[in-house]
Image (cartoon, rainbow, N blue to C red; front, side, top):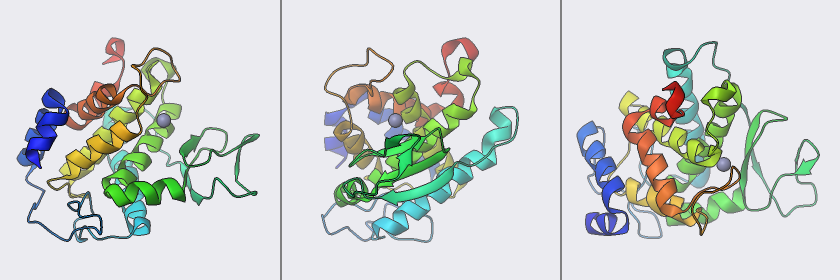
Length: 238
Ligand SMILES: [Zn+2]
């Protein structure tokens, strides 16, 4: 498992792996495995790795919101406000919820600025969850990252908004692990990297709408995971 990790993305992931072994919160005792045979992923401290997708979604929301709620005043002025959790939708249904005038996208997840809510197509969550439950944590913390961006002064929001959302996701999840509200186990970092790669663009970032290619997404997530929220802000304001 570790070998594969190193092979896929040498420099960045070594750093995160070092962080993981250093944080002391991971049990790594070969807990329950998912039907797919992958190692159990991110889970709340009392839980195992065989949580249902719904349980993982709930835990991901709790850990992410908890992180931002706990740390906001150390980082930014004003008070933290949680986005609304609109939650699951079916992007293929005729009555898909709207964000402003637009239907929420099929097989995707969103932060909707017009309604200040996060939502996800359950097909996306179920499919990803089969590869490992870290998927759910990544998607939710990434969309939450967009909610955070919408609360920040524009100077603090990176032009590479998608990569910044990945960075904020890493900062929140690994910050929650440091707080003890989330347990990150061996195998989770590999799953996170796989999820980031699966959701990446084919080509590197060039435009504000781009998500970045796999190595950029992994690098950005790792930056937040390793160095925290401030490392996700544009150079000029750090
Ligand atoms: Zn995004």
